[in-house]
Length: 395
Image (cartoon, rainbow, N blue to C red; front, side, top):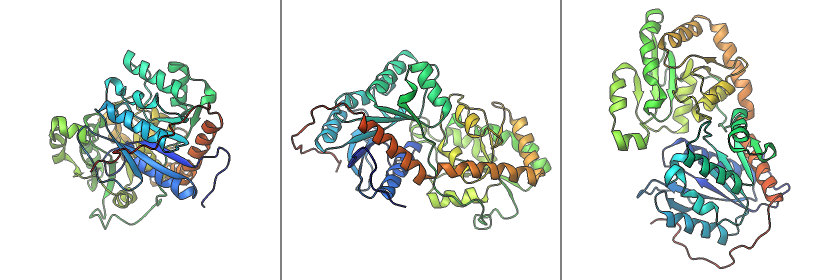
């Protein structure tokens, strides 16, 4: 169902973040958010300001109207001019420390300070113990933003307790997911017919803890010899650039690796084929995970380490939490689920029920409500009135 506008008078929205075909979770999120808002709100003009790695460019779709080189402070200032000159009503910032240049991602402040419209910032990482540079930068972002979006109640608590953000300024909106089938018959299409399939997907890096699932496989295979562990996704571009494929090569003889950034269609096939989904991540402070959100939304039985987002998303019997770096407990949990179809399917049902509130159309409507609240509370001020001829897109 498509919507017009409610309150707020928003005609033009800009979203700042990574965008496909750049390969990362923020790029997928920004693309999905902009696509969903455009689909739900027929009269809202949405433009994307895309972050690029230093010296790189991508073949973006027409919605990307401006690009920023993460290391070039001047390109942030030019992007601010672009937004101010083009009658943007609200800017939605996708914030992750690693996508912006400068110490602790501080270059983005050069852009945000110059904007003359309300800013709504989605925080993809919130640190419980930020270092002084991270704290200073985040404190300024929270002050410059009219509203702050987090994806979990714990994230909201960190904003209040660590950065002193008032509760009324925070919107808790779940990580969006596409409408995914709850079950399917894709095992035969993937050459996995007759197998018990354990799945992990997402960009590969050492903090994902894949080795601990691989170390659990001998005990799993002793009970269920037809089990296969599928690791789906390419090595994270930043990891590959710095260290090559050493991490993947140290693991790939021990599991079924699919070394590519997969399309949504391919991902749906693998999720449909999976009996158990595992996130063995090693970062306790991880405050969101698109891959875990997808797995829950598709009704998978999930096993995870207890990072912040997993503790909240898998509460109330929606999944199983296991200790850090504990291959023995991972093996026991997998064997238990494979041994008891009723238990496994009960986890699937609870996960799927919770996932209904996370589908992108519902999430997009909540984002626009947040933008409208920011717009209704805006402080009036001068806008850039001159028409700027900007080299916004790289050619």
